[in-house]
Length: 492
RNA sequence: CUGCCCGUAGCUCAGCUGGAUAGAGCAAUGGUUUUCUAAACCAUCGGUCAGGGGUUCGAGUCCCUUCGGGCAGGCCA
Image 1 (cartoon, rainbow, N blue to C red):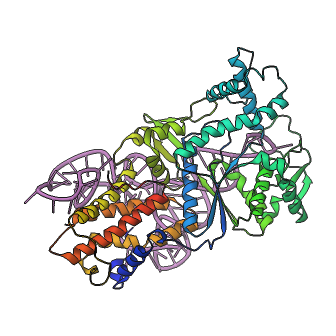
Image 2 (image 1 turned 90 degrees about the vertical axis):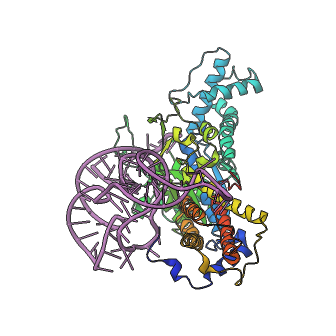
């Protein structure tokens, strides 16, 4: 952290004064970068299939995505936040049929949840609201296709309501919940994208080799519409449509990202789980072909969250109903401490989330440490005001760097690297640097706080210099905590 | 079998484009409030950066390899 040498000795005289003057002149804009040059960026995140409530692991996605969005704004992009509602696949059919089984159970009618369906208790709740809305209206209807088309919107929206409640608790707002189903209903993006790729001779009709690593009974090769991923050095081509002629997941993704390009986004970030990373290689190549730029698409993969309860790992399974709901955890530990815990480690590190420790309100929760540093500075500045030690104007006659102690200079040095830290984090889409920086700065502040006699009438210039630095530090702490989505309390 | 991710102090984790004696918090031990928030500070203890080889003036960081752990590998979702 200290790096080579003693940077504070290398500081040119007045460098700190100039820096603080800039900060004072425009507190909100300090650290604002121009990397994005006002270009349109889209951050797609969460995007969980609307088939039920979300668990604690999805919270990591939400927190990371929001922090990336804030970073890109800081970097000078015009940022759009989007949730892709995957309501076009077969899982929605299973969801509706599972819901319908629960619905029939409410009337003591014969019912069975499909083999690959959803048996979680939340569907009982949703079935009850369906019954409340429509009564016995659907009991006589047994045709599955009709059921799916009639109840699709209700089922999806009910599940989305669960998800949106958690999103709201986390303080996140999406510009749009983008319905994949609606895109296919209302536009011809799929055909357009495929046509464009075909014109580049990247789409052809052909057969794929049997899948490796797994034996599939009765495997029958069939001719499909394929994207020529092998042209980009990937091991296999990728199917755009399945044998029934419907778009595959890959095909839907290609169409969706083509839509993003048509909407004018030149920077497309997507936060996805590590288990999805196999999919983004061919997708990134398809996007590269569609827009002609290899740097438009930025997938950000994050590792899974392992949850410990009483020291034992909790197995996460929607089907078994053993998921740890995000809403439960948020209710227990609060959004601030959850967000900071999720942001504190880099996304490629598997995160162990200990429920017992997350509930504790002590140093196991670093968010308190950082917030406390902010509150302490606020307290000093309050006291100064009460004692009539109001800050004189920030200028050469009232600011003397040579009066600053080593602890204060450590803080000053951290303030001055704030913009470069932000740039680094924005360039690499690594928001965990924000949390790391916040903790570093808080550590320096606590040491500083304990080392000083803050309000010293006998030494007005030294006191004023300290207070100027404290005010600036408080501002930076508040800013970086805000970037993490965490509050910066004046008192604790 | 193939691909991706990970392996840093007893535990949970940092470590910017390779740069000087590897850093925090928790845990352990001992100190610090006649002044401004002790949810804090200070000191001590604790690491052959999984093992081995290579590139380099210099490697936790880059390359190869071994071991160990995780996740993927339909036209599924």
